[in-house]
Structure formats: structure tokens, C-alpha cells
Length: 67
Image (tube, rainbow, N blue to C red):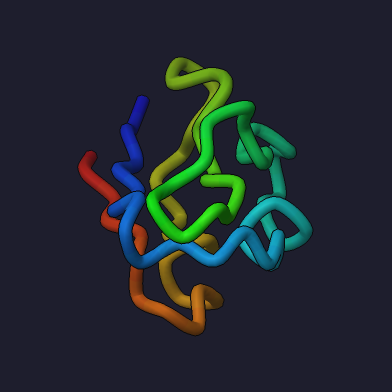
């Protein structure tokens, strides 16, 4: 079980994290940041393995993974 944190102000809603999550538990959420971008979020903390693919692929370095 792992948790990801998305720094909302840095996220541009590109969706690369969601597309590269092997468990498909990262999605673009319903909240937007101050720039109007949809922010990514983790949908199932229990399923997350902490592989950090989302953090590695993020071009804005907006994701941190905690195991």
C-alpha cells in the first residue's frame, strides 16, 4: 500500500501519470487548480504498489510517492 501526493499548483492535467499507471488507479480528478487545469488524483490507495511510474513520467515533477 502506497500513497501519492499531487502538488496541485504544478499539475497541468496532461494525463501521462494516469496513462502509465500499471494498476490504473491514477486519474484526472474533478478538481482544478488556480490555472484551470484538472488535477490528477489517486483513486485506490490500497491497490497502489508504490512503483512510482506516475512520478517518473510526470513532466512537471508534481507527484510524490510515499510507501
